[in-house]
Amino acid sequence: MTRCWAVLSGMLLLAVAALAQTGAEKYHAAKIVQAGDIPYPINTRTPGFVSLDAVVDSSGKLQNMIVVRDVPPLTDAVQTSVKNWQFSPAMDGGQAVTGVVQIDVAFNPFNPSGVGLPGASLQPPNATGGGDFQPANLQNATYATYPPNTVAYGTVVLQVRVGSDGKVHRVTAVSGKAELSAAAIAAAKTWAFAPATYKGKPVGSDVVVAFVFPQPQAGTQ
Image (cartoon, rainbow, N blue to C red):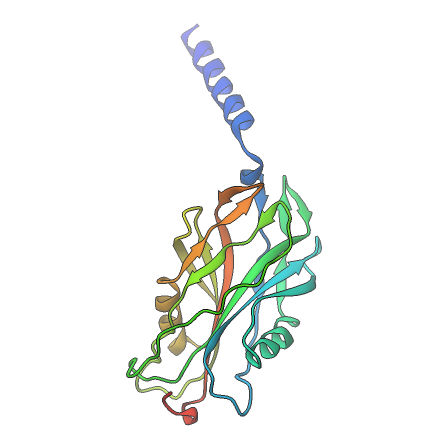
């Protein structure tokens, strides 16, 4: 009798938990699967931060890009490169649906060991469209410290887990040279976001963060 009661109690708890599950818990935002380099535009040494909302359909195909934070000519370089990236679709209740993932790109100055590293200045974000899911929005960011004693350059792409509190909980490297990845990860961990929301409630989500490191010949800015 005691065992039966224990089994019934366990089943009841599972049923209550299932009923208590919110729509936000059933929704999983789109993610990055594969990424490539973003070239630093020729004839410019201007650092800055570009943010895009990538609209991904239920097959994972990129449908549209909405500019959230615009820094010409850096924005064009991001849009051209992201067209070749691959994503996984958002999932809602186990079904693939159209979703949005924010991509934040830091065009990093060349400053070995952080000597004279400029302060980061974020352009105000543009208004984005409505919808049940609103991606996390970058609020505060810093540049990465260019590692000393290296001539490496290129793009490091990271998948950053942002909690419902807006804090960075986890950073995973997607692509990029190992000698630059550690610096990019260290910087991304200090970034702060307004959390994503689903039907008005804060939720955890994944944000794509990229650091574009210029060629050393660009010189210290």
